[in-house]
Each structure stands twice: as structure tokens, then as C-alpha cells.
Amino acid sequence: MRQIHASYTDQTVTVYQAYPAAIAEPAVRAGTFVPPFRAERMTWIKPSFLWMMYRSGWATKPNQERVLEIQIGRDDLSWALSQACLSAFDRRLHDDERAWRAALAASPVRIQWDPDRDLHLRPTERRAIQIGLGPEASRRYVAGWIQRIRDVTPLAHQIRSLVRVGALTDAQALLPDERALALPPELAARLGAR
Image (cartoon, rainbow, N blue to C red; front, side, top):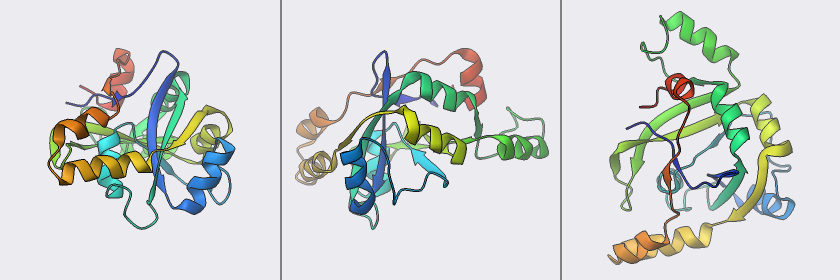
């Protein structure tokens, strides 16, 4: 159940982030993140729209009132994944906890697998990937990976309103088209995907 589900084309993959307006609005205008965004801090990108809705409370939680849809290059995502280490110890991937800690300290990218969410934001069997970009990866992200940023907060609110009145078919129809993103076997093994 660990697969990357995302909206993607041959060239791009869509990820999501939620921020306050003070960060989101300048980013949308500039087409990338600019101050007060700080590239020297870890930033987490999420390919699952519904996991982002869970995390941000449908764009209502403090400092997460604006949800951004960000298209990045597939090659850039591949680089990030190839440099990644799981944020939690997994004995199938590392001989011992010491080896994992060394790999984690050396990696510019961290990976977490969390339960994906349904329209009611309940956990599902499928896992959603969260990709944490450390300072090196975050600087690359800001400087060259981002191909487009769009504010999808109105979409988040529209879907939430439909869910609240029980119009689940209409809500489902508005969701981004996310499907499994095939990974080379060695990369899937590195990420603990299965």
C-alpha cells in the first residue's frame, strides 16, 4: 500500500503545500517561493490532495489557510527521491538503527508514509508519501524545480462544502486525478514502497 499517488504528466508532478497568506500570495505572484519563505528550513511537499486537506483542515488551520498546488519537474522529484531516507527506522532497509541514523543525517531529503485520507478525511489503507526537503533540496526546489504555483484554496473550500452536505459524487468529481506513479525497482526499495 506504499505507492506514490499523484497528478502527473510526462514532465511534471503536482505536489501541495499549505501556508499563511503572507507566504502564499508572494509565491503565487513570483511563481516560486520568496521571502518570507525560508529555504534554509525543512519544507514538506505532499502529492496527495486529500492528505493535504487533512493536514490543513481544508485550509482552515492557523498558518495553513492557503493551499498551493505546485508543479515540479519529474526529474527533480526523481533526484529528491534518490537522495531520500525514511524519517523512521525500518529494519528491512537498514541493518541497524545506527546505520539508519547515519543515513538520515547525510540525506538532504526525508520520507514519511502516512495513512492517506478519504473525502471525510478518515484514514485509508493506502499510504501517502510526504517528502521533506532539507536546506539543500529546498534551495534547489525554490531555484529551479517549480514550474507553476496555483492557489487552490477555493477548490478546497468548494469540495469541503459538498462533503458537508453529502454531495460526495460531486465532491469526488472535483478532486485532482491522482494515480500511481511508477518507480524504478531500486528507488522503490530505497523508499520502502510496495
